Image (tube, rainbow, N blue to C red):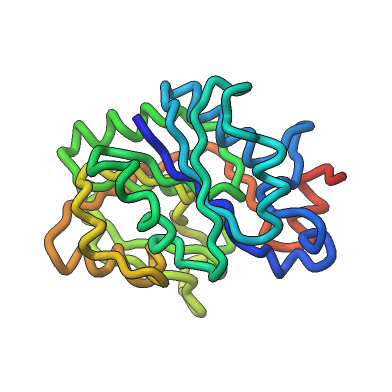
Length: 231
């Protein structure tokens, strides 16, 4: 299996912290978040990893190299102009080769068995499975509406107002079964805003797997101080 880990974001809301350090290199439990994500992939038997870079790319490339010390094969793409979360897949099209693959947001920490996502996708005969976790504050995340079988009907990205106190939020882990999604992706497309709605319009079966596993995000200085030890 293969995975692409998205690691190009600037992390501008973290201020001075990310001026000298890419957001995925912030440490938790003594390791960069990105390293935890690589270990999560390796534990699931995923050996071929694609990583997109933009902000301070050498910090990530110098630390992880070609991935051999982790038992992985890492291929990088440096985006001189920042692409969208979905557009970042396009430079890796030939490597992914229209086989099933995972997409993982490299600046979130979640200790999860990726094979559970694949098994769920197989059970549902889905084209794509999106992992969701419960979050009380949903203003900075993406939510969805589901039918009774947890098939996604609609994506709502970063809702400005919402009546509920909490909801199931996109955890940034996707299992994509159908490689032809590349036909629906443009370079600056985002998954939540553009690609997932486009795929739903084209009758893709997208399901949500809801997990109670804790996800640690580092989107703001407050979350950073609460959850992480930085260099």
